[in-house]
Length: 406
Image (tube, rainbow, N blue to C red):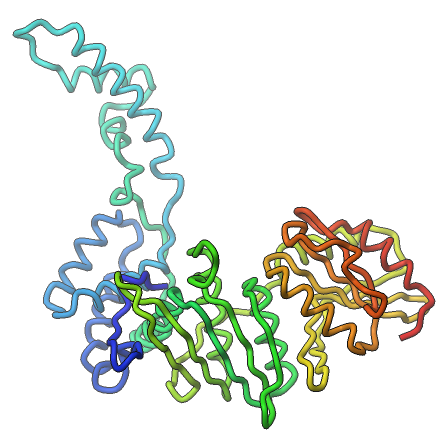
């Protein structure tokens, strides 16, 4: 992913326009991308400093340092660094610096500092050679880190990933994002909504006039305290959106040191290529499934694949479904871990308006929603959790529904 300083854009009439590497620009930069990939394909065993020197030789005459550095950043993201190298550097430095300080305190006015003697004495105490001690002194610095592997790519894929990363970089400064989805298949909608939840994005969904859906997302800059983590989560969602057709995105962003408010527009017509991998469940959901599976219950738990269209009101995308073996009773569970308090009450309102199934809403305590917040018309229960969702509490709640038909 590109940091904001590496994002090439143009401001034009209140809009922010990424400078894509497509068409004629792609033809110009493809040879540079190929040369960089050639360097990275030989990087195994190099230190980061050595790799940097080899890369600099390629991009020195590129003409556009920011764009070149952006391509390098994306290639570096594919490097595997040997974490074990440099693990003893801090203790070796402490030993050598302490010995050096002791020697300096004992020097006379005309005495010379014996660096080699200090290193040799420390090497003897540590049971290592002087050369190993010298090498270990600063091997935990970034430039001394050793590269053990690199994820291969092609020049075409690199340029496509660069364009996607430009759009992601703009979204890091978003205040608000609005996405329009044309009518789509169940699996496509499920994929989009599950990734929104997996990325823990604060959102609302409503039906679009003429069909389809409008998804409103808060951007990181809309939060009371803007967080880099939330911005990265929003950027992580983009590849899933890009992976399908029939979508438009509009965002308001704060750009530059002057934090100018600009409009950013994107659609499937831009031709961006997705780099997505299949999302997994949020940690709290996976932990609940594991914990519940260890209990002896009459309930089976599984990931729910349905998207419930509540006509004229919105959608409900549960995380899990519990099915009772004896009665066939189904109970749907949705987790509110990183959403807003307002989102919980909107969900209560949505489900109270005639959802025909039983529901458990697992709500983080920090959202300040009590278990008594659900009114009489709500078809289920609220479970408040602190750090993890109690499998025993879920079981107890489910057992109150046993024998109640759908």
